[in-house]
Image (cartoon, rainbow, N blue to C red; front, side, top):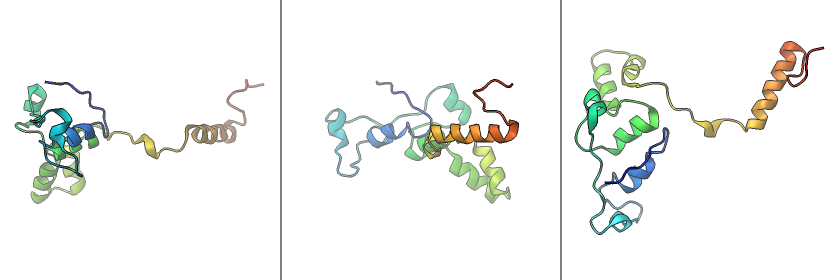
Length: 136
């Protein structure tokens, strides 16, 4: 058994590319050769958290994307489909599948120096004082 840290956002993609694919060939890569001649089996849901969420068996790529990529229940797609079929609004159904706040996507933020310059300008306009200078 190996343990690998998963990060919020797209940290799970290492596992979906190498481990959770159960030795399927992807983009010409022989996954079995990555580890051993027999490869690494896909992950399985275990523990109290899995029981609380009602997931068991083999972990799918879609479940990993929902949980680690979007902060949703691993079976979010099924939950949203069932609730909307029962008459819930799509926003309400999606809310039931959410496990917390969406993970931030820092790649889409402007550069830090641009954000600081914008904030300095906003403070200047609001207070008339430069934030790094003492009021006189």
